[in-house]
Amino acid sequence: MAQKLLHIFRNTPLGRETLLQSIFFCKQMGVLPTVYIPESTKFLMYFENDVVQVDLDPSYLNDPETAVAHAEQLLNAAKIKPERFSPKNYTASTLPDIPTNFEFMCCPRSISDLSSKIGLGYIGPRVRRIIQAARFPVLITSPVYKPWNRVAVFFGGSANAVNALRLGIRTAKRTGMPLDIFTQAGKTKASEYRAIVRDEGMEKQLEKVLREWVFFDKGRFEDNLYEVPHDALVVLGAYGHGIIRDIMFGSMMEKIQSTISNNLLIAGPKYTVAG
Image 1 (cartoon, rainbow, N blue to C red):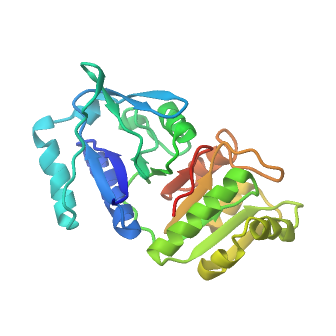
Image 2: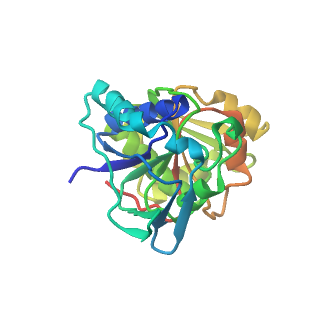
């Protein structure tokens, strides 16, 4: 069975940019996009230990007469057979249930705020909840369509950072693109981070795709982010707890959000590594 990415389509110019980004990601990863064109502003996602109600802003229902044609036009141009998702189960008449058995999901930085309020440095609370509960990685797109030709992983040594590195290696292998690692090391020796990779049995896999491992021994993290290539898909973990360092919402994550505009692929704490 083909792996799939769930995309919630917004029939606006910004929504077009987001779908273009999903299409690009799917073509690089060999994944099929499944497009949901909402007919109401709310839906439920039932995860293993959480139920997330997503409240879309009204722009997601913009000009419904042209929404299907606009989405199919973009998919056809990319030579992808359009696949639409239609809810089969409803908790209430206007509250469809969206399955969570996808391999990826695409979100803009916020799926419940008007586009005029969306900016770098802000991830909407519903998107945070999805990342926290999902077993799949979440693709958070740049504000406008931005192709990428390399993979960059933030690695701080936590258990979830290890998962993110596995995801980065998987992404680099699938796309044939080189991988860079970025670590804000501070006073921690580079050998300690390399030991984690070795102990997790990833050393040989990493050697096949790694182009460069950059350690920042000094300087502010947000200033060091200038070294991250603008044309990289950034892979990181969220909400993990590790002995050395971590990427977490409210700290490193927000600094990344407010500093770079790269597309982000985020592995939450429930993310299950796939092949």
